[in-house]
Image 1 (spheres, rainbow over the protein chains, first blue to last red):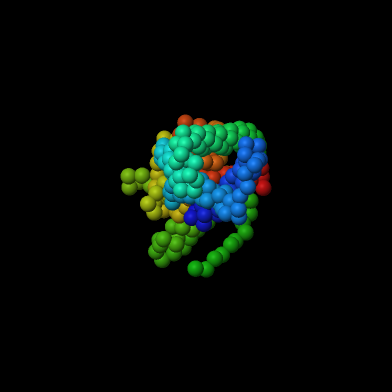
Image 2: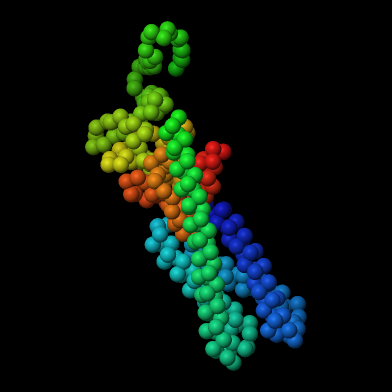
Length: 147
Length: 146
């Protein structure tokens, strides 16, 4: 992938992640802690969590085409960096994690679950695309062999 | 170089003749172009020159400023550049699938996912070629005739 494409992709991911985090905070907060109110600084939370979730994508960048094994190693590294980033933001931004360290486990588990589900959906979408492409390829080859 | 095109009767075979003072790189390029149009590529292997049928080539890959033709069993080096071959072989169903590789779509058996939006082309001989995410869209266009 070209560097420019990579950065465009990264920005797009950041915008998407930030939006989703805002939606999750809104829904989860309304259901679990509806009595809480925040100041304007609360608007920065999705932006900061979005950065923690998106910046580790940088480890996936490579000028040459990565082999499957290389990509898997980088994906694991990406997950570890996301976990580290989210922990850092959580510990730095909220006292409650210091008082109840068990919450960090829940947070880490949630990040892992979201990461696995996101990659699973992406993989399933790729499987579907590959099936369609294989069918189209077969039709393409038949039509060219006939002509 | 002066160019002459003469019409001939159907009873004579068509031919291209290059009259030159010296066989330069430019002349070789013209010869390679004409051969490619006729479905032949010139490949080199261990100092010997071979004519390789385009239909036998599974993929063309550029490695360290050298370009190689891969058939099911042999690998030949060619003096043509990858971008030249991309232009010449487009009509022969070759498609660029990564920065350094042209794939013969007629030699692909199936397409599988390969993580991160990339795809993998499985060739009839079992070899697997990564299709970059950027070129997956090009592949879709080519298969749909766009």
